[in-house]
Structures are given as C-alpha cells and as structure tokens.
Image 1 (cartoon, rainbow, N blue to C red):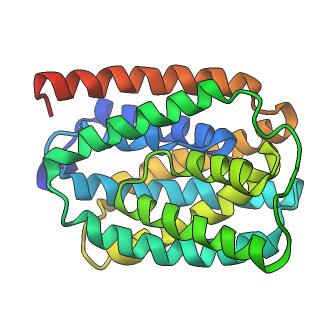
Image 2 (image 1 turned 60 degrees about the horizontal axis):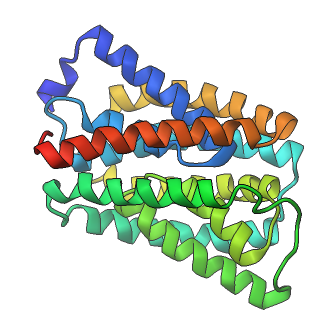
Length: 262
C-alpha cells in the first residue's frame, strides 16, 4: 500500500487520463473497466484485489452521473431496471467476496479471455439492437432481467472488465432492447453492481482512496460527456474506438501472459 501511495505525479496523471477515457467509453457502450482496471494492474506494488476495489470506487462515480444523464434524456424502463439492479447488487457482493480467493496469477489470463470475447462479439454483431423488439412482457420479462443482473453482477464483483458491455449485450440479445435504451438500463444496473462490490471491499480495507477518488473524478467527467454524446450521436463511431482500445489491451495483456510479465 505504501508503494502505491508514493506514486510519482506523471503516473497519477496517466491513471487519471485512463479514468477519463474509461468513464467516456463506459457511458457510451459499456466496458470502461477494460481501460481502467488494466491500467491499475500496471501500478507497481498494487495487488489485484486492491486494483479491483479501487476500480470500483472510480467506476461508481462515473456510472452515477451517466445514469442520471440517461434517465433524464432517455427515460429507461424502471420496472426492468429495479429488479435487475437489486439482483445485480446481491450478485456483486458475492462476487467480490470470491475475488479474494482467486490466485493473483490468474487475473491477467482471465481478463485476457474476457477481452477477446467482448471484442469478437462487438465486431461480429455490428447491427444488433437497432430497435426495440422485446421478447417477453410482465413477470417473465422481469425475472429474466433479474437473472441477468444476478449473473453479471457476480462477474462484476469478481472481475469487472466488460460488465457494462455484457449488460448491454444481454439486454439487446436476450430481452430485445434497442442499443440506446439498453445502454441507459445498463448504467443503472452497473451502478448497483459497483455499489455491491464496494459494500464488501470497503470494510475489507482494499480501496486505495486517494487514487480511487482522483480516477473517479475523471471518470465522472468522462461519464457525463459520454452519456450526452451517446444520446446525441449514437454508437457507430464509438464502436470503432472501442474495438481499437480493446485490441490494444489484448495485445498488451497477451504479451504479459506469454512473457510472464506482471
């Protein structure tokens, strides 16, 4: 912990920039953790659990402002968001508890697999979610939404990168939402998963507060800008940027796995 707190100014500035980019990407298409968490894992002396916990603190600040922005401009369906968010919060608490049991050397390979999966799905499904085409109504719709929230919430507490993207993909492909309302719903649920993880990580003393708050402030700004851009311009141009960013991270983490770098 002491080594992390003694970071030089240039490193902190790079992490803040990562938080800004993560907030913007997360608000528009989800997956800001794909930028923010790997950046934290590169910090000398930080443990994987500390990186996860600090990432959650930064992310919840961004998801809070993007959720409000989407709510005001898109008006997401709260009858779906409510049960989904409650289930996701419960899943995130359990996932965060499980995260402390995973050997540190497994984190990078797991995140690498997640990155590849998200990149492939994003590239192969460019037209998915053009308009609402809901599969079910009533209780079946809500129970399905809650099940999705529970599973993805557990993943978010356990690892986190790509959670927003997985939520959007699930809302579009399983429930049948169009991309923009799915993004709005995903932000509300993602806020709940971040909160659930922090309910475990904060008492456990895993959060690095100074670094997390600095990245969170940048994440908040990025989230506000990203949510407004998503509503105004749609997701086409962001999808290209997202694939490029994910591709770069796959190359970096893949190199680390092959060479055994930390």
